[in-house]
Length: 193
Ligand code: HJL
Ligand code: ZN
Image (cartoon, rainbow, N blue to C red; front, side, top):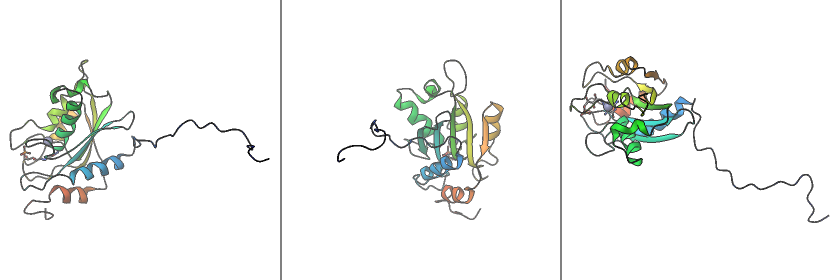
């Protein structure tokens, strides 16, 4: 009969948005997004073009994104990530840990630095100081696309230092060539090292 429904009545419960958070175990997906960020960075002969993401590993939510020289001054990708997240919560960067979820991770196309020619605070120290009020470090792991090429500071001890401080560093293989070509765009020897 016209107008009559067949089968059980379905209740329309409102529009369900697509999942916003990527799968927290899909490290390649986050690394690709970090590489997207790196490509936003302006080419300079004096440093690398790096991209980074800050992610809540429990939910997969991307908390912040950053790239080299995004924020004011001579800023690194990981630093911009932390700074932007802190500023959005009304905190200075050094207190960002107070607002971070307990199981936060960083994806960076390049190993975080441990020495900067400019004398600025290295990103490994910025990551290590992300403690909550309970004194626990909030960033538990750092996923890395490539180790830092020995171009500006010799061998980078960023990874070693993070691990000495209980922060696991995990290489995500597969994008090295692309990451290095983006990182070195603007260098005189671009692509030849
Ligand atoms: C990482 C970045 C970035 C570097 N490394 N992990 N993220 N630019 O956003 C490391 C390189 C330093 C140089 C120059 N680059 O940046 O070693 O001028 O950029 O302090 O040592 O130092 P400044
Ligand atoms: Zn850095």
